[in-house]
Length: 624
Image (cartoon, rainbow, N blue to C red):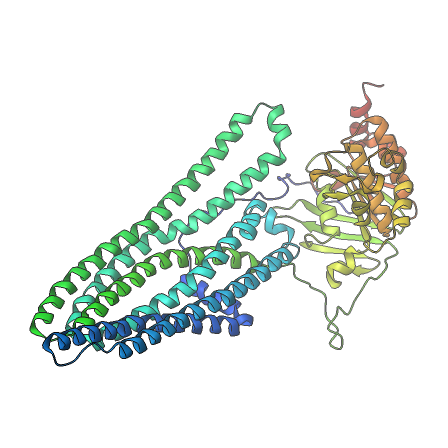
């Protein structure tokens, strides 16, 4: 029987803090995020270094090309002048050698570029494959409070796993190599220009500080919009997910226009941030083109004067002209790459923020010899003890004040009370979705904080008000309770839970595919399938949370029969608003504002004429 300790009741509070979105901002640590991303790519450093080396080699080959081609031009002009003066002719053999050399150089450049692209694509896909896997595993490790307590919305997590990782993949594949090739080309071209003419090189280099100022101004303005764009994309995804899942309610209350209004509000914010980021991104290239053209005009003027003075060869002028174009092109590309890197950093930062989120901490002491928890429940008998438990989702705002109950193995405990009394919160504590603030909660004499969560939860099965079933066959959904179960065991569990009669009427029977949300079967059938899943799991402690609240009386009777069979020989916690369903419970705990105000059997509580009797009579006063 339950042993209850009571304290004066306190004012109730809304259960579960709500979630909120973080407002847009600049990337908090651009350099740190890029460094963290490079460190994350550590396992693939060989491929990354090879790709960078090949990209640099490709650029070096292409940079040498114009100089070699200029030699061919100079050789042609010298031969033509000698032919005109009657002192010689054009050396076609020499020109042929130069052109063959040029062909080999360009082929080597193309080969290095192709191999680099193949390697970098592989590295990028391996990185994002690992990242998606880590996000998926992280979702199961973050505490429930991460979503309940204002961390991020589920839609935002989905956006980080899809949009952010996809954008990161594209940016990483394009941006990193483009950065390397652009810098290499700038250095290589600068060296080649200096070898041709210091004067012409000086004219070209004047454009560098102008370019740097333009880049700095535009990058500083655009960086915050890339971060805001990704965050708003997550907000839009969250809104779409919410509207899709609640479409029936939206239509029933004629709130379609309101839903569209809320979506338009988020979509407008996304449009604003995306427009600004893309506009500033597109603005850099034409600005850099103007600067490059000014430098090109200066080179033409000075080069013509040097040629007249005989201070430079005609082929060198041709090569230098090509180098000027090749010099301004990578500067323009750097402007584009800077936007790509900003976007990459914004996406990486959001992904790493989630991967760095706090996880459920194991408080169990470890055995030094094995590294595993020193204390374990194993296969529990089912004894549960709440010892002066207090809990609140937020500091100083308690929901459960001083709750004590000693539940013997195999007993059925019903927990009743008005909405917000803390009934479901007790079950969250029992499963260690949250830990108690004070007191202790034990299973088979083991404080749940001294054992691993996996060890604790293997002893629980649940049937909830919202029957969760995934897209897949009925057989797969039932087998979710025990993955190694045979088909015969799955079908036996279905018969035990009174499911077989409707399963056989469905096309394909046990191989009938439930759609997303299992909307192609009734609510009552979904509940029976979740009971079959719990039957197959065959665990010693059972939690039934409003399992019959959404069905009609006849279906409720069928579900109740299935649950009665399921509860036989198990420690069962039944949360119910329909008090007729818990008449046979061994003990009924009546919660009010986080306190147990009454306890006893159904008949004992009715005889007292207290709060439970009032609840019961209010449900059946019309019948009476």
